[in-house]
Structure formats: C-alpha cells, structure tokens
Length: 117
Image (cartoon, rainbow, N blue to C red):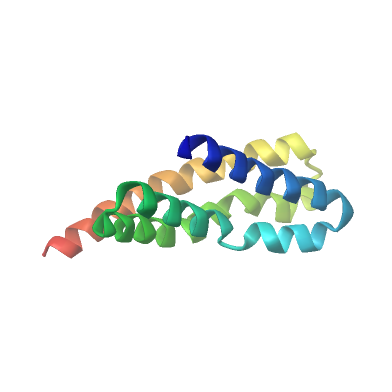
C-alpha cells in the first residue's frame, strides 16, 4: 500500500511541474531543480527501511550525483549555436548523462574506499 501512495504522490508532483512548465517555465524550472526528489526519496527510504547508515550512504551518492547529472543539460546550453533539434539535444544529453553515470560509479568506489581506510 505504501508503494502505491509513493507512486501517486510522486506522479502528482511530476505532473504538476510538467503542467506548470507550460504556464511559467522559469518557475517550474526552479522548482524542478530543487532537491525535491532527494527530499522525498530519502524520507521514503528511511521510513520504509529504518536504516540510518544506508540512508546516509544514499545521501552521499546523491551529493556526488548532483553535479554529474547536470551533464544532461550541457547540450541544451549549446543547442542553438549548433542548430540542434530538441531530440538531437535530448539524445546528446542522455549520452552526457551516461558518461556522468560511469563517473558517479567510479567516484562512489573511491569514496567508499576512502571511508574504509
């Protein structure tokens, strides 16, 4: 039951931001950039698993991932300059995000190694 409530709540948040992006894109962008997902996911995770150590590790992973996940948006900064369509820009962003994923994975290995030393 809790899973269904989490899905409904998250869906309402995402749908509301998507709707708002058509009305006030700057405001919707600001709200989307907030660590709203992180706030919800960390709280849901702690409530569900009651494991503070795992929640702290999860938060560390989010902290490392935030700048790396921003790589998705780099092609959007240059889309007009290079004459890219939305879908070309989006696909390029996914490629950049994939690179960020592997950088994150490597960073987390290094971080967990340094925690153990």
